[in-house]
Length: 458
Image 1 (cartoon, rainbow, N blue to C red):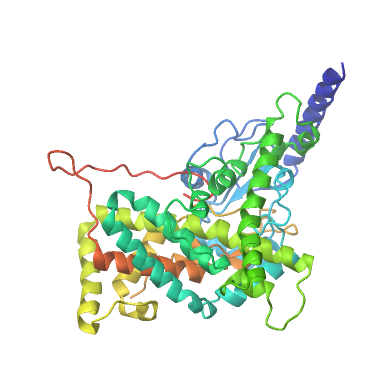
Image 2 (tube, helix red, strand yellow):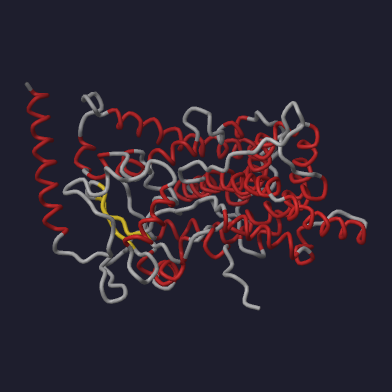
């Protein structure tokens, strides 16, 4: 009897919420968008993969003349899509004082207990502390302290690819994990099957990237549209989302806690090597790091680990793919690095980036053509805003790095570290490898499929 009454109460609440929402929609002026259904919005037509392609198509078809600005709702969740660089800069950068908040989703935020995650926080004092800690180590100048690590790991990468090219993707994952684990924690990754490499595997149960992609997918979770459902008990029929959120949230927390505790053990043993975490836990001014400060260090380092590995793997995989598909471009880039090697009689380093204009152009093109995060992370306004008077809420091409790493006060603080790591992997690979299509038993090229995964990282 109690279950029936609870079900009726929830159903009634949903109906009332839907009616209130639809009445509220009529009183607001939003950018144009695709046709939508009452209550459902575009939920029935929303894509399940490669959202950015559909958003771009909708922008061209339904968007405003200013560049495809569109708006729609999915079961009550209002979304505005910025389909042009001009709109993104005008709002997310020029008006960053009010456009730097995050929408705190019920599933990926509240139920997973991600209140302290840098990816979920509003633009508040805690987030400013995170960014301050990162800026101290990862500004364009400060990040040079990690160049030796990135160069060493890039050499190991190429050596492993030469030894077993069939394991290319595994080598790329090991490299990315090795760089970020050494930088963030001083932890040495020596094997492809290292525990911290496995955590990043897309095929691993409850991997970071799977959790982030599934938990934040637009229209995936009814509780995001009707937060009242978060009060449904976990045992209630249809409330499986609550157990998923609890398990996923605990997994993400433990994946940050484990390497953090490893550093603390190394410090106690007197064997800790210099790293982002060890330096913050042992401040140069000798002050005592209390529990609150340590908690902020844990989440800041965890953000580096969470975001750094998967994104750089995506970019370097795209680089290998484009070199395979465009051998003429590859040959020209190889000629540039070969000339340097023969004239300087040494390997290139990250200090030599200016000597490789063509390789630098390839890096920009990879970021433009296949950005690791095609639709970025959502922003929300801290206060109401009117945009363009209607809506509430030898000339080189524009540098794609201005878009690929985010905008305004939410730009990726590890941008320079990531760029340097990717660049040196590209240069050493071009110097030592020839990247070509696989061949079949008759020696004929096997044409690969051009396709991307969907999610936070593509």
